[in-house]
Image (cartoon, rainbow, N blue to C red; front, side):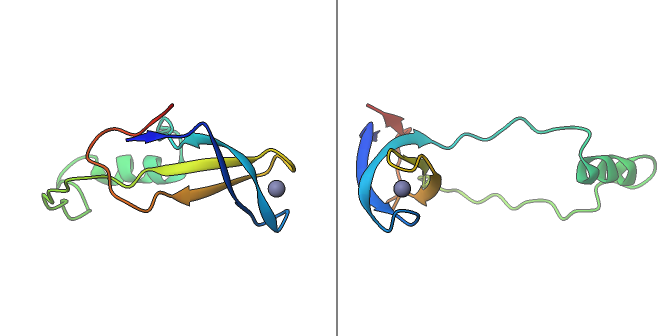
Length: 93
Ligand SMILES: [Zn+2]
């Protein structure tokens, strides 16, 4: 799926339709020193395994990409989940 470089959508800050720069959301690097991660590592230590229930195998065909829109007028960002699921990897033209 190909997305346009510039999109004209509603900006909640300007309260009008303005041009936006389009960027795809990417998952950031997981930090090992976070409180939740440290606690999880502590609980997993020693006898007995993971305290969380294992995830079920769910087969999903497509993903719903999240696009980050930056307003050209006020340069504020907001997110928007793309309406349809995509089987191919989303990319910007
Ligand atoms: Zn704006």
